[in-house]
Every structure is written in structure tokens, then in C-alpha cells.
Length: 328
Image (tube, rainbow, N blue to C red; front, side, top):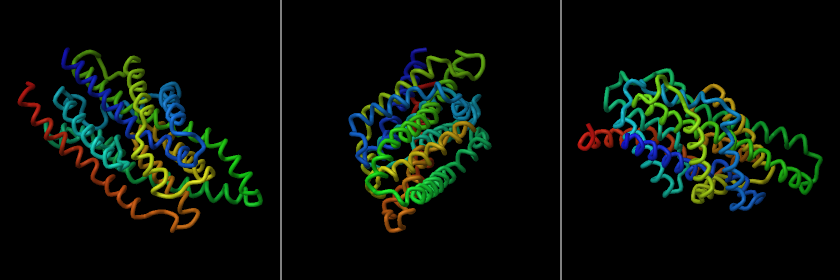
């Protein structure tokens, strides 16, 4: 029981780091457009991160908890390995200012630790294939929606003065940023819920895979707290290094990203909020002109996306192996 509590605490640490690492997803655009000061933006995002459980179901938690590796293979060492791989990769990329995916670090960690224990047979292929496909589809959809929204809105307001457009979309960005933060909290916090629920099932604390209310509240709270502390290195990368944003562009990027997250969460697909908003930001930048996007920065981000799952899986497998020296 003592080690179960330790692992739950470690899972909440990951959730906190997820909020810290992914704060940029929720606030980079609204901060970079100077619509909201950073100290207020984090409170804004944290609130909507926390209340997300009131809006969405728990489909994503079910996918992560039982749809990536066979829940029967889950034990303390597997969870320890998965969290070790995910947390390590999060800290490395946070320090380097790279907007990698906390979600896919956790998925990679689960796969690495699960395979280290029971081989490839432990993999639940439908869930892994859907999650892997989302690595490509979520930023592509974010890009497409951001691009289309930018072109449509620009055409609608073509006869308006720049001052009037700027004033209107400074106000509308509060709505779009709220929606994106809601989608972020709804998709990302559920991943840790799934981990804790699988752990409780493995320990016989629940007769079937189930996410108790206290797990929901603690995960949403840990993520909101992490968001409050922010991740300013990554905010800078997301909000200004990829492309310069206006309030109109920020609104289009956040709205396109939010629509993608809402759809993925409804279908129970654990997508990367980082991938999604990056694709949307690149889309609105490209709508202005292709040269407006700093493609060398975007290329570095894509490389980080590609190596996230295997890197986290490797660390998780090593952690699983090392834990055998101290755990049965």
C-alpha cells in the first residue's frame, strides 16, 4: 500500500510537470499577442484546465489506462518505468525549451516498460495505431484549420481598418484561449487519470477499470497547478520563434487547435496538445506568407516529436530493468 501511494504521487508529479511543460500550449498565443500579461494568462489557463472534467467524458483516460498495453500486464514496476521515462523526457525538453509532447512521452513510457516486462504481445494495437496516427493527423488538422480560418477571417474583414480588426480580435482571443485551455485540460489530464486507474486495478483496489472522482479532481488540480507556474522557455518558442502573431492570428490558431482537441477527446484519442497548437500556429503564419514561418525552428520541433516516443520508451525500459533490483 505504501508503494502504491508513492506511485500515485509520482503520477501526480508527472501531471504537474505536464501542466508546467504544456502551459505554453494554452497561453503562448495570448501572451505573444500582448492581449494578456503572463501573470494573468496562467491563472486564466489554469482555471479552464481544472474545470475541463465538467465538460468532457473520460474516454481518453480509458484509452491510456487499458488501450495502449494490456491492463493485465500492469504492475508497480511497469508504472514506475513508464513514469520514469515520461518525466525524464519532459525535464530534458523543458530545460532545452523544446515543445515536445508530454502525452507521447507517457505513451512511449508505457510501451517501453510493458514490452520490457512481457514482450510485444502486451501491445494493444488499435489504441497504439490510433495514437500514432494522431502524431501526424493532429498537427496536420491544426495546420489546416488555422490556415482556413485565417484566410476566411481575413476575407470577411478585408474592408475593415487594421485598428478595428485588432480591437475586435483582442477581445475574441479571450474566448479562443479559454476553449483551447479547456481542450488541453480535457485531453491531457485524462492521461494521468488512466495511469492511476490502471494502477488501482492492478492492486485490486477496484473490481474493474474505473476512474474514481478523487483521481479526476487530483489530476485536474495537479495540471492546473503546473500551468500556474508556467513554462516560459517553451512559451517563448511557441509564441515568437515560429512566427510573429497578431490577435487575429492568435484567435485563428487557438480556435483551430481547440476544435482539433475537442474532436480527439470526444473519440477518446490521446493527442498531443503541443503538436496541435504548433500546427495551428504554422498554419496561420503560412496563410500570411510562407516566409513568415521560421521553418528551421519548426523542423527542430518536428525532430523532437519523432524521437519522443522511442526516447521515452528506452528510458522506461531501463527504469523497469533497474527497478527489479529493489522491487519484486
